[in-house]
Image (cartoon, rainbow, N blue to C red; front, side):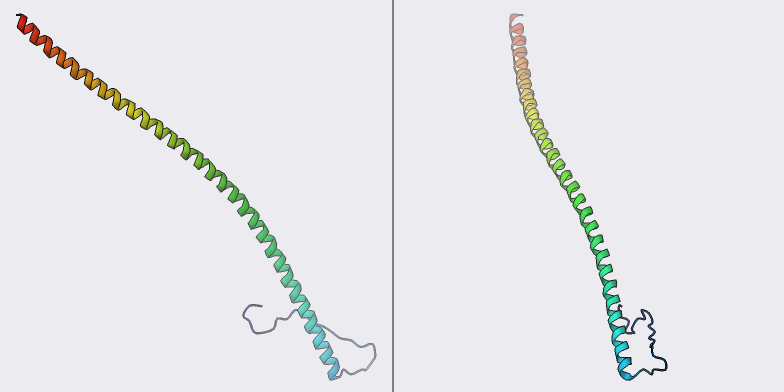
Length: 130
């Protein structure tokens, strides 16, 4: 595995003949080597399959967790949108109230100016009477 060029030792095999005194030929060595290579390949594939299954399970778990987090974020976004709409509504109400206060302040100033004018007029009339 990885970048190591040396083959990994996965196990050892012992070959025994039922015939006593039999000598193994080159063809027997080739057959044993091919058998060992196939067993090693099957073991490596099984290891890779198990790793893939673990990775698949991990990804499924992560996907589920992200799905839950996404739902929570969408809910929070919806709540923020609602709060934003409420704040905009309150801002509009405050602007209207502010405009009413300006109108009342202008009316009070006009009334105050009129009162001052009448007071000045009364004072002139009283001064004329005296």
